[in-house]
Length: 125
Image (cartoon, rainbow, N blue to C red; front, side, top):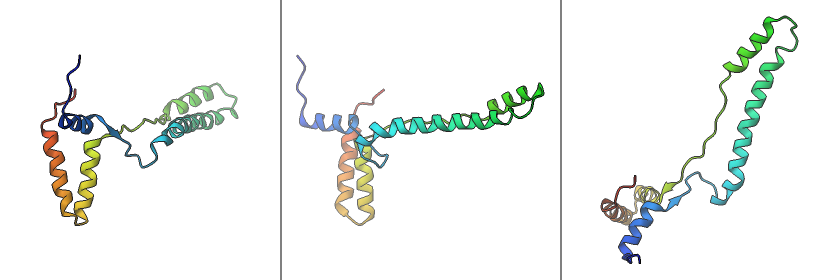
């Protein structure tokens, strides 16, 4: 049987384990956005290769094949990678920093409370 956690332990685990989307869009939008971004990059790569290959079709000499191959390999392929979500504590501290910059004095106190809770957090590997 697992031992029960105190509310303080639960809060600490929430700050360290929960993640928030910082990309600036609805979290459900990634269902369509991730495949769309991947296909956009693939189209871009296919288009670049097609443009490089189209230059070699007009010449009939034997050196054109090597030249076209060199142009295709010289083009760096575009890549796309997902940006990871940030921990809840990072998001909360970011928001508190923005609020304190606007003059909310209570935001500094709340941010310090979050930082003090995180000092006791075990490091994740």
